[in-house]
Length: 180
Length: 167
Length: 93
Image (cartoon, rainbow over all chains, first blue to last red; front, side, top):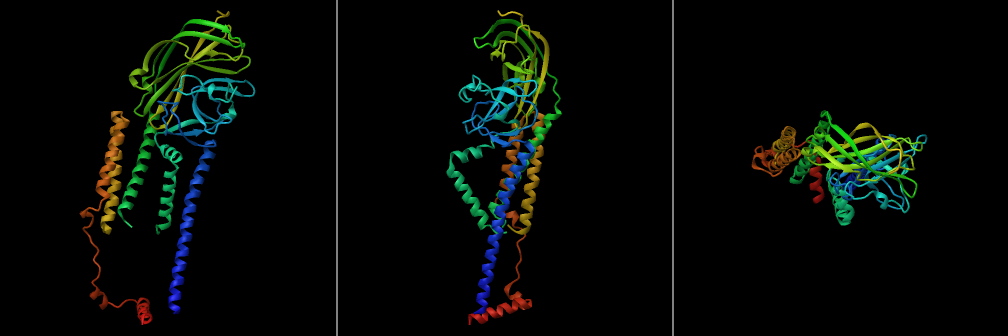
């Protein structure tokens, strides 16, 4: 009976090793995604280097579901640039165009007014109560590049969470069951 | 291992990689285009020039814009956003930029235009510094591609001056 | 799909896709139409899918020739393998 025990042991060890390998593969996928994201953050200097357009306020330039690449540099902000900004008390950042800039001479502080290309009026109504201008600290980055439609994946995932769970489940199953 | 699903997956991955590559080259091909746009702006009249109740100066003016931006369009251009901004310096601010008018050009044929307009957005200063002020009018454009990198540039036109007295 | 067929399928996929990409890009660039480029490329992808994904008969022209069991028994197996087979028989008894 010693031989059977040997076989069972070898099978057990194989499965254990396979399980380990798969866990490592999964870890590698997750960490490499994280590395790419953090690397982009370093290169672009923006806390979220890629944003998905969620509203139609910049049509026909940007449609819902388009992806924007952001860059945050020390260069001063000028009119016409498309910036992504955060309003205090609002969770979702907004992508709009700068239409007014007032810059102080010595400190370099700026007052900025924005507007969506497709909106009739400027953004003062979107700002916090009583806020007239955006300052530098509200700006998360300026849009430099553009990729159409790709962002739909994330929109669908956030609006229909079930799709996300199915997808994650299927992927996980695939990783666990696949050999080699 | 070489199953239906495996082949479909390999094909899809390869196809998307090539598509991304094509888009990147298309975006790069834009840099080979060296545009030669021309623009001319004429201020026809100052319609209103007042101090607002809160102490800021406000101007309303009528101007003529003629521009030829056709050379900005390439095969990868979705739209050109063009706008006119007044730029001036005051004692408080080293730079003031105020958009007066903008326009979205979707077709190359529409990029050669001549428009008479009053300022679409309010020309309001931060303070009361506009009397007798020299200012530049700058025609900016922002080229949005179908995919890839966005471009922006401008033509600065100098030598405009606001009147000495409110009207 | 046999080994030769797999290699052929993979090569066909890569060659056809790259060829279509090049053609699509230049046609699009010359005609100044981004949409044209995408259409041609999409057509290429569909064509490639039809050619390389289903298991067509021409991928199976080189079937593997396994040794006949009777032939296999004439050639003795290596030592280790022989030992395990004998053990198996032993344990079954």
